Image (cartoon, rainbow, N blue to C red; front, top):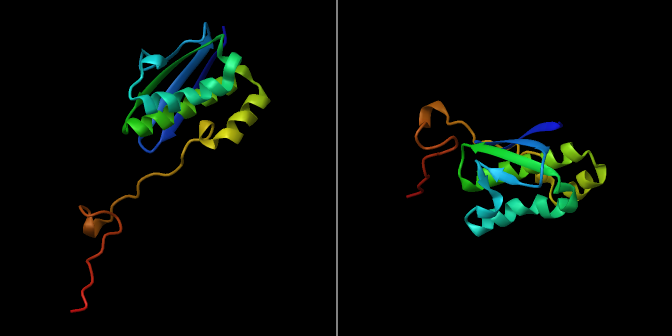
Length: 134
């Protein structure tokens, strides 16, 4: 039985996907994709499923996601799901389709928060005192 493990990241959210042969079920934190709320999150998560079409009919994907907020988790999950589908099927045309639609379906977002500087640790990394001319 073929099993594929992939990872998607967005800021502090990390999604780990496991794809294996099955009947087309997708679960995120043991919850079916169809039951995800809010609707915006569900629709964004459905994008790789819709693009994959019939290629997904014999794949079960379990995704565990931790950290970050709901939008970061959604982006990390999309990336992990897209990578899992492409890697499991091995179809280059599917990979090209994902890349042409949205690159973040296959490539994790590399941006991270900037660390705070020592002198102004509570105000942020680039905070400066406001200048007054009078």
